[in-house]
Each structure stands twice: as C-alpha cells, then as structure tokens.
Image 1 (cartoon, rainbow, N blue to C red):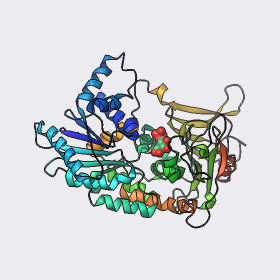
Image 2 (cartoon, rainbow, N blue to C red; image 1 turned 120 degrees about the vertical axis):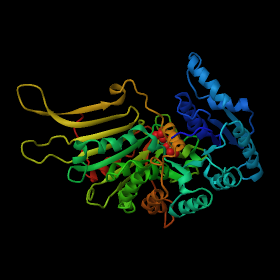
Image 3 (spheres, protein in one colour; image 1 turned 90 degrees about the horizontal axis):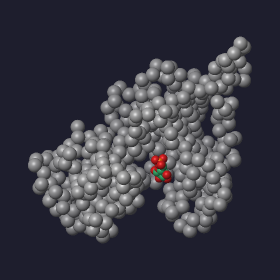
Image 4 (cartoon, rainbow, N blue to C red; image 1 turned 90 degrees about the vertical axis):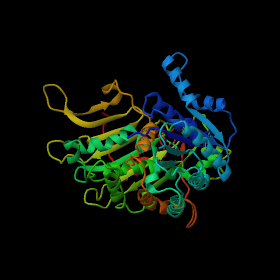
Length: 485
Ligand code: BG6
C-alpha cells in the first residue's frame, strides 16, 4: 500500500543521476498521480542553490511543456512540493539541519506517522558516511518507515562488495534497503516472468533439450566521452554485465518461484546463479574502441589514462550446472561505441532432426528489451502456393503496434513506486549480489592485472558491430546465423 505523509529525500540532488533519472521519474510518477497525496520532495547536495535554482534544474528536462497546460500545472505543483537543502555529506551537524527541515515539513502533516525515503543519487565514496549520518541524525523512530534506495557500484569485487554491504548494514537493515538494478524496472525484463510462466508453450521448450544457445546483448552507439575517468576504473563488465545482464539471465533461467513474493522470486534467482561457476578466461573476449567514422577512440579522451587496457566491450560465456541447463552456453555481451542502440535476449533453438527438412533455419525467440520493445519468434512456414517449400518468417509482437494505448513506464518510475510500496521483488538482495560477484571476480582480477600482466583487449572501430573476432566467438558456442527472416 502507498503511504501518505511521505517525504522523499534525494541526496546528490544536484548531480547527474538525479537530473537524468531520479527527478524525472519522481515527476513522472507525480504527474500520473502515483505518488502519495501529501508527498514532499527534498533535494540535498553540497552545491549551494536557492529553491528557484533547484526547481529550474529539477524540471529542466521536461519537454513540450510550453503548449500543454496540464503539464505546466503539474510542473508548478511539483515545484510547490519540493524544497532544497545544501550541506556536506560528512558533517553530522549538516544532517541535523536537514532533519530540522524534515521535521518542519512533518509538523504540517495531520497524522503523526511519517515516512522518510532516502534516495542515494551519490558517488560511492560517500555511501557509508551518508548512510551513517542519516541513521544518526535523520532517522524517525516512532511510527512510519525509513528506507534507503541505493544504486551501484556496490564495490569492485567480492571482498570490497562484502565490506561495503557490511558497513551499510550497521545502519540500515536489509528490509529498509532497496538496491536498484534499473534493468529490473524495465518493462520487458518484468515481462520475462509472464512470458515464461504464463505460457505452457514457452515453458515446454525452455531447457537444454530444445535450446542450443542464448545470447544476451547490450549495444550502445556512444562511447564513454565525458565519463572516461570514472569508466576506466570499472570497465564494461562491472558497468553492465555483472549487474544488468546477469539479472536478465537469472530471470530467464530460474525455476518457477513458488509465488510472486519478493523472497520467493529472489530465492530462485539466487539458486540458479549459484549453479554458475566463475567465468573462464577462455570464455571471454575483450575489446576497446578506436577512433573511426569521425569519432574519437577510447584513449583519445583526456580523462582516460594513456595506454589504458580497460575493456569497453566484453563477451563472456556462462554455464549453468543444473539439470535444466547443463551444456547450454549463455553468452553475455556488451559494448560501448557500437553501430546501434539495442538490448535483446536471443534464444536459439536446436536444429530440427534430419529427415524431411535439411538446412532449414533454426527457430529463434527474440525478446527485445529496447528500443521498440518486442517479442518475436523466427519460425519456418510453407511458402504459399502449389508446392511445398519452407521459408523462414516470424511471429511478431511489437509493443507499440499491438498495445497502441499503453505507455511503457520508465524503469526508475517502476522501481521508485515499488520502493514506496515496500515491495522488494525488483531489488537486489544481498546474497544475490554476493553470488554475482563470485561469478565475475576471478575474471575481473585477471583483467585488472592482479595475478600477472593485464590482458590487452582487441580493437574495434567506433560505430562498428564490435570486434571482428566476435563472429568466431559466438560460432564456437554453436550459434548458427540463419537466413534473414
Ligand atoms: C548504466 C551504466 O548502469 O546503464 C551505463 O553505468 C549505461 O554505462 C546504462 O549506459 C544503460 O542504461 P539504459 O537504461 O540506457 O539501457
């Protein structure tokens, strides 16, 4: 249930994440009337800003509001319910100040029971001091709930993630903590559960007997310009594979949860992840983009150390040792500065047994997460006419054509709403994070040069499909390119 008398406090309100994701999502929810009636929003950051300046920033991303009176009114109301406080992240006295501001707001509420939702739009270096200060200075102990919403990076490997989690746990319980992986808020990722478990036809073919290989692909058409310094510390595996793509994999491969409850779902995800051994070097392909098509290479960014061998592209193959999936390769691949923006799951089925049809295209089920959400199944059908010839074609469920009336929500809208309701299903549990790091830590330590020389990624041109070695890599795991359907 949604709580009235709720204040959402956005920490790091002047930063990039708040501007691009958190504040727009809050406004989106407000406008669609999903926020509690009495909600108030408080921005907090180091930057000194007056309320007007904050309002200007908080709503500057909203497009087309000039000619839409409904939007203009919503913006005005949104401004009226939000305020801004500036202060340090380390200083307890600053948090006392924030607390006073929150108490003033709460004094105006009718009922005594108030809720505080703290959203960390913060750099990881201040996660722990802020968690501590909030607990010590801004925690309400009588009635109502306190929650924190926090997002990666959660450490850099298994040990540092465990350290971070145990530091945070001193102040905030698992129940109060909502760890975002924003891929879990995406419509098509949520759809996986329905596609799999609400369809007998899907369920029947969902195993090693029918499936040859699976690819989960993330492609972005832009490089790391502007955030190269940050990216270089992490690399593409920590940025995308270890979290977003592994989350997709776990929902795709878990057994059916006993119920829709958060713990039942997350139990199954953890169980399947525990069947995956750490990734082998031989199952890995690393790349880095170089200048091409008038675009700069990764190393041309001044904030990137010269000669960095940080991968901006990675393909890795994971194996699940359980009866359902033994022997099926799951290829996770992600890259920056590629030829297109696309995130998809591609499940390639096995060949039909030899006999009446030869050299016929394999079935493929594609779940396109973005852009243009879609599910399509490549299959063979008889060419219409007075002879029998099979041609590859497809059954196509493209969302914007089929569901013309529906708006697909933003991932952050869905997740913030869940956190307000106290529903943990689409948030990352501590043991899920732990097992994710177990799978990736050895390969990351190798890439970081912790046990020898750092491996050198192969080059690929900005704007290309990725390293030229990719084709051989996926073929090695049994992927067969079929005729274009
Ligand atoms: C973030 C990564 O977690 O996800 C970014 O840090 C990446 O590098 C982004 O661009 C992708 O998110 P989306 O929603 O645009 O697919």
